[in-house]
Length: 136
Image (tube, rainbow, N blue to C red; front, side, top):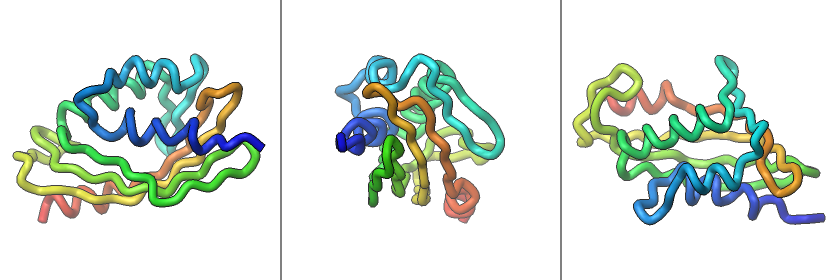
């Protein structure tokens, strides 16, 4: 069976984690299928919308890190438990931030990989925990 974890890993190391050497839009264009959907309990985002959101996060959280802690594969799905952290600057989810406070949250994603591209990701992030950390 093909190791799909290595297809998914760059989503964290080259897209979600800020890297001043990388072109996030170009990387996401190659990594995500044209029909890609990112789904949580509130909404669904396509490839273009998610790319724009990630570019915005890179500007607002210049030290954003999204570090996989565990990756599991089941068929064509890759489950990733990761830690996201950073020091936001500006208005971040309704909180005015000056970069002096950091958040560190757990995230869990289930990626579907087809023909070498991520087609879907279902995700949960502990943003309420992050907001508490930034407010304290």
